Length: 247
Image (tube, rainbow, N blue to C red; front, side, top):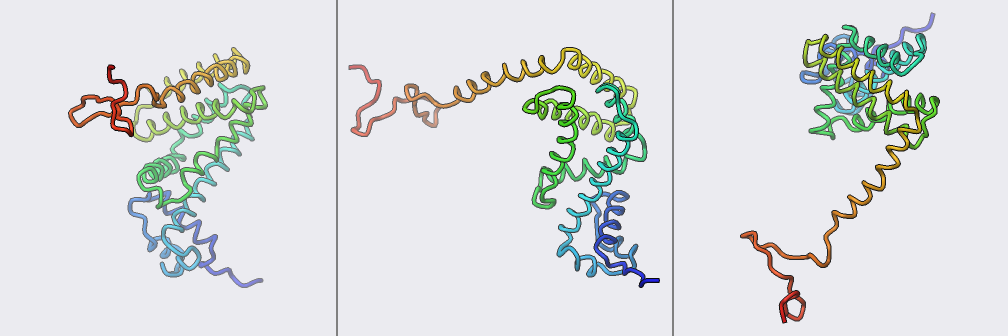
């Protein structure tokens, strides 16, 4: 038999810290509990990651990897026959008490990252990317143009996360289950209208957004200076004369 692997191995440290975060959250995250579980010291934990912050970033990524892997395995094992069925299946999967630690940690890390993004570098970017390609590819397979699939996938993920955040914060499953049915209804309407309808809406909105962006630029004709009292004065030319003064 080969020699028993040492507990200081990087993978062991990472898994121990991920387990600790799932059970205790970020607010009181310290290295001692993970070190005690592995029978080593906090100093040895940092040997593999350099700093506590880098270890936490890696542990959060490991937790997220586990979550996405479990969700992907669930959806592969029980493929949905329609978007409505997929929404119901994903909602029931996340609503299980087994997923509560993952949701609490996810939203805690998200909140901290919004205020102090330097603590968990890359977390917000990874959260934006990890599910988007999965949903986008499903939409492309159902006939949606790839240039529009990202927008529709963003809507679906955003709706899910809003409902999940509400579920973590409030114990009101009846209200949330009803809200999911409304979400399903919207998805069914989109499905009934087909990919062309969604594409038409998005294509029509692009010129409007472009005009709105151009309209925010200041006009040369209307340039004025506002003094501290809020009154407007004509802009003076370089030669000292007032632009717009009556002759």
